[in-house]
View (cartoon, one colour):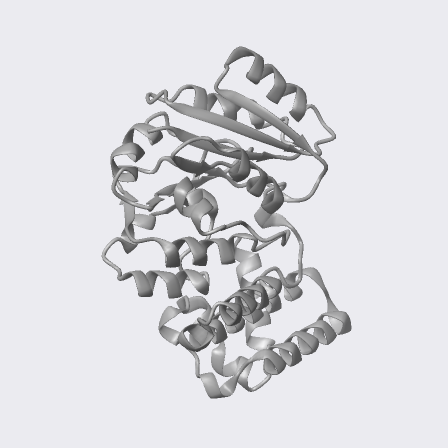
Length: 324
C-alpha cells in the first residue's frame, strides 16, 4: 500500500524542513510526498525543491496563492497512492505513523488518528484523542463532527484516495472552516471508519502563524451555509436540518467570542448585535436543534442566543482571556 502525503506550503520556511524530515524518517517507506507551494514569498519553495532533489519520492508543485483548501485539492488530483495523509507544513508526524496506519487502512475507508498540540518549543499543550470516539455510531460521529464537537481537521484522519476520487470530494475554498464540508462528505461516504489508537502520531504546532490564529470575527459562518447548500442539493437536508441548526448556534457562539476579543466599546456591541440578528435570520425554528451533537461549551449559551443576549458570552470570553 502506497501512502500519499499532501502538504500545503505557504511561507513556512521556519518549520518546513522538520515537517519534511518527519516523513523521510518514516519506518514504512512506500510513500510519496506532495509539497504544494501556494505562492510562498519566503524560502519555502527552495527548501521544498532541495528536498525533492535528494529524494525521488518527493514532488513539488507550485501554484499562485489560492489558500489551503485549493492547495490540498491540487494534491488530491496529483496523488498516485492508495491512501491520503494530510500534513500541515508547520507540523510533523511520529516516525511510526505509516507503519501503524497501513493495517488499519487496508480495512477502512477513513482512519482517525490521535493528535498532540504542542507549542513552538515542543511543550505539550493538550492531547486530542480522536480514538475516544471509536465506540460511537457513524451517525453520531457525523453529526458531532458537523457542529465541531468532534474536531474537523483533515490532518486528524487519513482517507482512501479511491473514496475521494469516486465521490469527487474536495475541500471548500474558505480561508477558515474549509474542512467542515470535506469531513462530512468523507464520513457520509465511508463504509468503514477506523481509529489509530496505539499512540498520538501527529504533532500540531500551535504558534502565532497557525491557521487557527487567523483573526476573523466569524470563522465558521461561511462553512455552515456551504454545508446547508450541499445538503439541499443532495437531498439530505431534512435528515440533518436539526444538526445544521446546532452548527449555526455553535458558529454564532464562536463568532461572538471572537468579536469580544477583537473589538471594544460601541464597535464591539454593534458587531455583536449584527451577529445575533444574522443568527436569528438563518436559524430555522421549525427544524428544532440537535443539542446532543453540540459541545457543552456551545450548548450552554443556546438559551441566551435565542433571547438575543450576548453579554454572558462576552464575560466568559473575557475571563478565558485572563486565564490564557
